Length: 345
Image 1 (cartoon, rainbow, N blue to C red):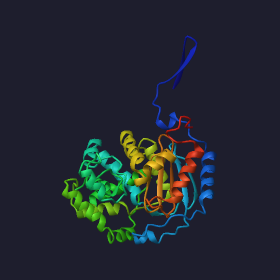
Image 2 (cartoon, helix red, strand yellow):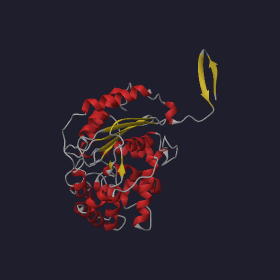
Image 3 (cartoon, rainbow, N blue to C red):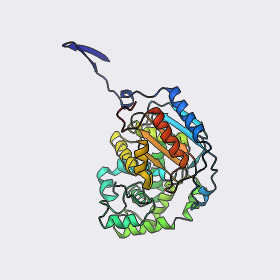
Image 4 (cartoon, helix red, strand yellow):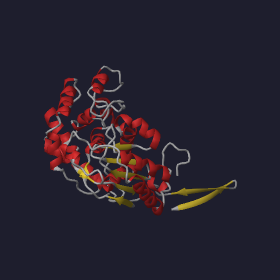
């Protein structure tokens, strides 16, 4: 309920009921959003730069022509174009939702001191970053941050549960809460990655040697591999991102996946480390927290407003979707949602 009162010629409006984040901001009108994603789709549809991830056999076979864009707003509207319903492996985008689960279970201080939150400035699978952090040159615990492989493996080792299957169900259920429906493991992806994950196994043992792995290394790598192997589509990514934009509450199901403080911390790590060693360039160009995966997915979040999800499998040298980055930057500029801009709409 609103009421007004006047003091020396000024009118003040007061409200005696809660005002939620999505009610405090002006969301773009539906036609504007749909037009922006359609323009982005057409503008970059014929871009052929980049290559599929070749070190994972399943990903190497993905159709590079597939391209889909979705936007989900903090008030639950859904917009899509192209192959936005095409399922693909979530890969590293999953790291942000496992991070959310561990923050919810153990709190921010545990993540800060056991994993770290500083960008490494090195490739996502770097062992050198672990060594440098252990020598205190990086100002972070050896894992680095939850969005590089070492940090994600350490984060997975913190997931609660007495058995591997229990911990896996916890990760998958949390991701499903963000997506608004149950998600499923892609067994072909899982098997493909388990046959080629020796590098991650080595990272896990290295972390264990430094006292920064908190469960059995073999089981943890298995859990981490499963985490990267469930299927999503661009609409799922946009919904999951919109849940973060909406303070942890899924705007389509109205279910709280995490609280607002957890959501804010996840977005902070996304902003600093979400696109591997090009995270600084991304934030400079786009001005939004984002997260990519080598499966070709990318999600970007406008806190309080909306999220953008894109799928296109060809990647740049850092492991980020080429068309995904171009599309998100175009949409962000068209909608005027750079979070650092003084005139953000």
